[in-house]
Image (tube, rainbow, N blue to C red; front, side, top):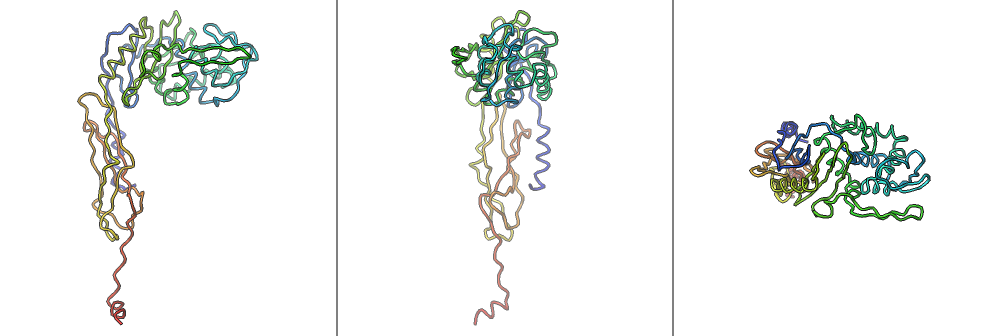
Length: 364
């Protein structure tokens, strides 16, 4: 890449952070509304208060299982994992299911026996798997989150914050398997001749077509907990409520508020062609363009602009696909991205004129 691009690339590392804002009245003790593309929190109510999170724990359980096990691997339940308390798939010792079917049981029915069976299969033991959950939390920068089990039953030291849980859910939704599994409304499992219909506990999936994923949770200690993800017109939002007596209404209110503020805007960079003079080339100019468009999620009053960064000239030869410049994309005047400009064709060197001596002998 040309040296003239380096100062622009360095500036990209210091893009201005986004800010949080107020939101609608909520029943939740703590809540967050997160726009993951820019990292902005549109709502942050007690978002850094440490609280229990019940079965929303299983978002991390599923994410770590998907890191460690193929979805088609077969998993056998044993005596240590089938007797977990709380919601259950009613596994029996020796039952064999695919990892994927156990993940459906984990995310739709919130089955605690499925959580422990998956944890032992993926981590070697439940404690070792929980250690992997905490390593994943550290890797994601979730400084206020700690896990003591894979299901979310009450345990001292098992806690998170609405802010951390929003970031965790956003990371999980980047995994296509998690998105598919947690967004499934209903799944029928065959288990040793027994048929079980799993219906997703996340009521938002049945009432709001923009909701694409999520996880419910409840214990007496935590109250009602809910995480969900929704997309409208190219904008994705993550909503989190902890200890929320009216969590369904809270999430609907958060989404109506958040989506009313945001829009996706696209700069059609790939349709814009630029020309650069070429010294010593068979053609006087080289044509170049960006390989793709660029888009961003904006709030009211925010703007996008683009500026071509091109050298005054190039030396031939230049090959198709070679990066010869860039487009600086600015959001509200601050540098947001640098998009390379690629040559759309070759410009070979110009053939040299024959010397006067050669021209003289050619005349004969």
